Image 1 (cartoon, rainbow, N blue to C red):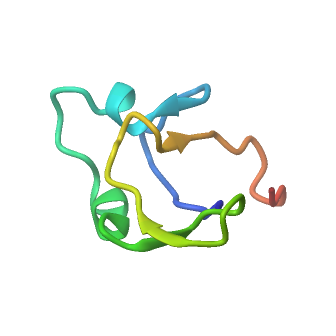
Image 2 (image 1 turned 180 degrees about the vertical axis):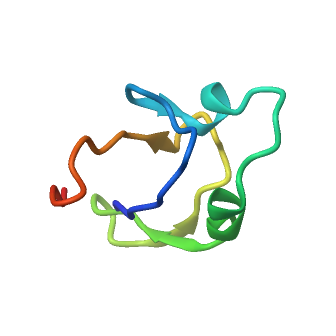
Length: 67
């Protein structure tokens, strides 16, 4: 599942939330999505992703590019 979040100081390449914010407080935009249900496209089941090593931030180089 992909969602778009604007981060002023996000990573310049794909990184997990855990790597990007190790030892620092996560921005409010990321804190707001914690605990939300996510759909597993493989199983079709809803789950809550709590492992920040498995949630990735991928920079968008164009505000018009939607992935």
